[in-house]
Image 1 (cartoon, one colour):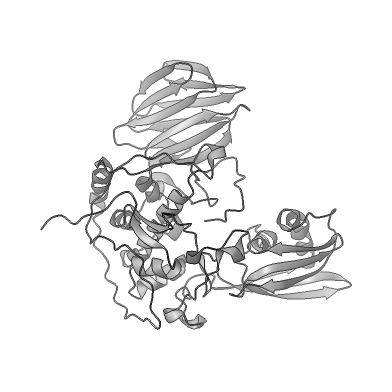
Image 2 (image 1 turned 180 degrees about the horizontal axis):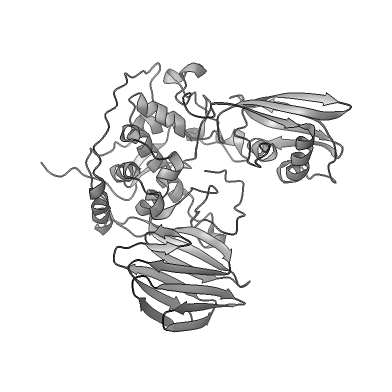
Length: 468
């Protein structure tokens, strides 16, 4: 999940403002308590992980039962594409196509048939078997008739797909879907496909992802959506991404949300903290939150990297190295977008790079870059967007690193970064959550560790064990 200070620029995916309506759940465990249990000083666990029995065949039935209840599962608008000129929606089942313009037109399509929407200057054209319509800046809503998912751009999606036109002639494509079904396409991509033994970490991920989606409503209003389907918010892969362990975790925690001061918390998460998470205000130019403070990712909160919950995950330690030419190229290209003050003129020479200040956790708070166009400073997580990894263009894994800089003739000739962790470091460490689950902690304790002070609440649904 990426930081709130960066906007989504791709022309093929994007995010959304909320629309809510829904239902509730069922499954098979006790009701979640009101608060997240923290880990006490020196708390240790014997490894006692019991993998749940997951009946994949029953998953869809349980989701249908959940969504049929009148309790009100929220719906969410997920941006699938933006700025496209045409799009096509089909299904293996029947479709209902509704065109909203000056008047409303409804068409039914048979299984395997498709509708094509084409943008145009202040208009859109809708084409399907036996019909064609041209309307002024209308909206097209495609809904399944039956249980078969829709397909857009080669990916299957539950819920409905909406296409609307912009005045420049391009289109936006949105998946309107209940939030629990949305999570089915998010959780396996955010924490990866996991065996049943890791399910407590997957439950924690489901709650964090649900909370994040509810908390971000309205932030993407300029896109006409609630969340983007990329790392700009949460990666969403529709039906193709679904996984039985993640489905089980979503059902077990349906409606559970992290709350703070009466509102959904900003439940950020990242791949690996490297042994200690970071406070939000040290990473982004945002105010502090008590539940997003820095915590040691170890039993009892000890500063012992060898016992870190995420120590077994990839990128706990890493090294990157740049030649002088590579550093000049990436600084010249990316410093104007990351420096805290405007860059004056083109950059030809990089004279020095140094860590000017660190955060209490050890990450880089300020990176100083001395160039022939002046000295500039880069703050917090933006350091990762400046120091792109050589050969890939990907952002740096984390801002927790040491620098070795070789200079000759007044210019940087080589830079080596030795770092820890992967991601911005705020909130839940995903590999740490997996490590905790493998040591016997449950999802309440995992969330209590990474979001201290946030409370778990039944926001819109509660699961109850069947009587008897």
